[in-house]
Image (cartoon, rainbow, N blue to C red; front, top):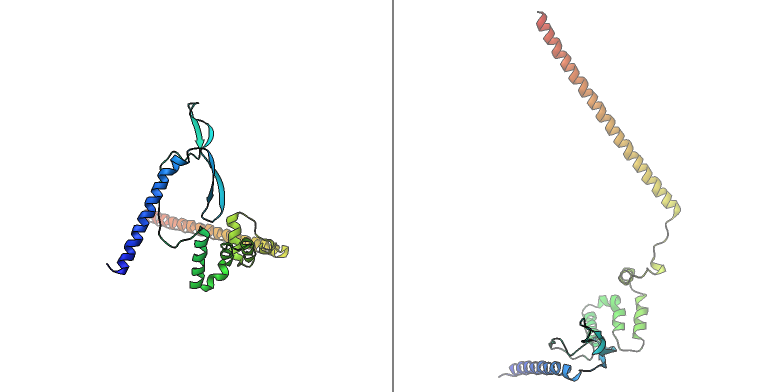
Length: 219
């Protein structure tokens, strides 16, 4: 077995061992955490929060069986494993990914520096990110405001319409509408005249035919 084959086999066996350990823990958790308690968990962003499990929350429909909220003693659970670089938090993974992205495409740095700052573990990183947001292109700031349901900043709001320009625009629209009405009326007039001319021609043709018929009868 070559060194490369040995390394692949080692990593595969290591993944199997971690997955099997996870399955053992999933099997043990409902047996150990079988009473009401408070747990401290760490989210993917690295922030901690407390959750209450196995809390009494009334009774079932039969009026006798206790009903528990966040009951970890029931249900089916499984283990999912993904091999890759080791990160303590999701924030570290995001930060490394964005850093690699900026290195590959430096021209995108001014567009995402606020996100890069917020992904750091520095003190005041969020405040730095908020300040960097103020220098983003107006299109991105408007899009962020729209997604968050916030009004546009005062500096980005369109200026109020000029009354003179608005009046001129309304006059132009009224003129165009009047011209359109006049053209439609002219078209109807011409159509009516054409109809009259056609009727006159038909009448003349009928009179001519009648005149010929009358002349033939008199001879």
